[in-house]
Amino acid sequence: MKTIYIKSRILLAGILGILVMNSCTKDFKGLNTDPSKVTQGQAAGDLQYIGGFLPDMQENIFSPVDYIYQIQQNLNADVFSGYMMSPDNGFGPNNTNYFMRSDWNAQAFDLGNQHIMHDWSQIKQIARPQDQHFVAIALILKVEGMHRITDMYGPIPYSKYGSNAFFVPYDSQQAVYTRFFTELDTAVTTLSAYVKAYPGAKPLAQYDLLYGGDYKQWLKFANTLRLRLAMRLVYVDAATAQQQAEKAVADPNGLLTAVSDDAYLNMVNGLSYQNALWNITNAYGDISMSAAMKSIIEGYSDPREAAYFLPSAYDGNFEGIRQGQNITTTAYAGFSLLNVKSTTPMQIMVASESFFLRAEGALRGWNMGGGTAQSFYEQGVALSFQEKGATMPAGYLTNSTATAAPYVDPTNGANNVPAGNPYLNNITIAWNSGDTFEHSLQRIITQKWIAIYPDGQEAWSDFRRTGYPKLFPVLVNNSGGTISTTSFVKRIPFAADEEQNNPKGVAIGVQALGGPDNGGTRLWWDVNPLVP
Figure 1: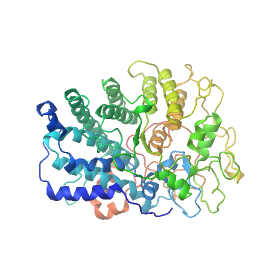
Figure 2 (figure 1 turned 90 degrees about the vertical axis):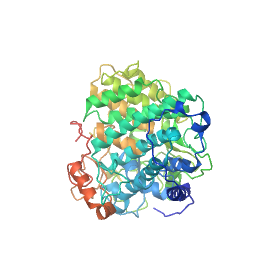
Figure 3 (figure 1 turned 135 degrees about the vertical axis):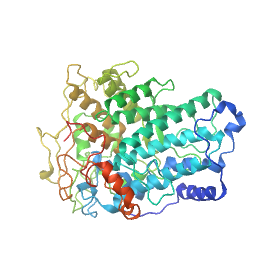
Figure 4 (figure 1 turned 60 degrees about the horizontal axis):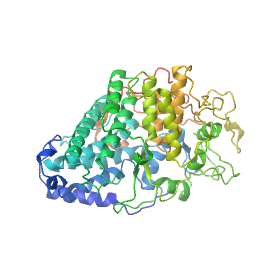
């Protein structure tokens, strides 16, 4: 891991935030102001006094700054998801082999609080009545950013963030998710009213890095986000999960359904950055293809492999690294790097995810708006190939024989995963209406896992929730017994500086967690009885 300091809009937004705090004293007037009671000019308004907060929120869902992203997500969720593994022999015991480093564990928490929650707190204080469309976008970004944080740690400071108390209590994850759905309600109601009153208006165009100020796209994003969060609760609160999922699908504003709907952190409006993964894989040489990815994607002869990774310098083939090793040599330095350019925009959410979510909902008997589990599943696969610029082979969706391939480590046979190993992901591609529920779910989640790459955070959450796709356990477990090798890592421990600066808040969080503050304690929604 290197430390490279690059100029970032984060600093500019932080300065703007300080100026705003020192110059604005207007009160927040509520989120549901009727936009039809202000003029078009007032609605568009001069948003410069508050607009700078929006890019900062978007840039910190996950950071495009390489050395920040590396410990925010890459050496955590991107590895835990089975997507990647580091070939670096200089890390020593670390999160990838379950030695949960406290200096790494704080990064995601700090980023969420110092940017997403801080920006939201400022917006809440200074937004004017005519700015409620801005507030609605900020609410969606708040939910998108902070659901990733709670899905890493569990309980987090949320409802009381920014209060002038001696300590900030942590909300239970259940309470946080309840607020997520309420906040999405507010955002969708506000934006829907605005779009109806001012069709085609894009007052936030100069501040919006994802959709250029197109509120119709933000409404689709909000509904797809609701569907994602609803599915997270299916084993802990099936009734709420179904209610929220059906609500997302029924909303007339729709879901993300096409390549043009995909959400990326676009290099527009003055934002310029080098894709964090490009630097980590190319400049640092710190991340490569994983053994699990090689096993699954090559077992299917899936051409998306070349869209995701580069042939290895080791032997010219695609080569992945078995997760959870104590790497002490440079043997894996030539294994497959990620196929990403410095100019590749960082992915926030892809539309194919919505079809896999609907496929799972339909499999569970929910009303997913017309269509079957099979039809949604096949649409999701087809759309993923389009999103990744790959051609789906003829017969791919009807292939009823291919499964994950045995893994062979060309440098060390002790790392191999042979045929018949229970951790090989033994599911075919072709839909089979006669399959069991679990086989059908495994099929959906496996293709979803391939499709949403490289979003390791979401893939890791799905793996914890469903147990799919099957992944290889770590070879070396340095957790000291706090994380089960066969149950995999469940969460990231709370930040050490929080335990020093907010000990009462953390104590409330640990109580709400319901277990010790380590990587082996399950989150609130992680209760699937079939997942060890």
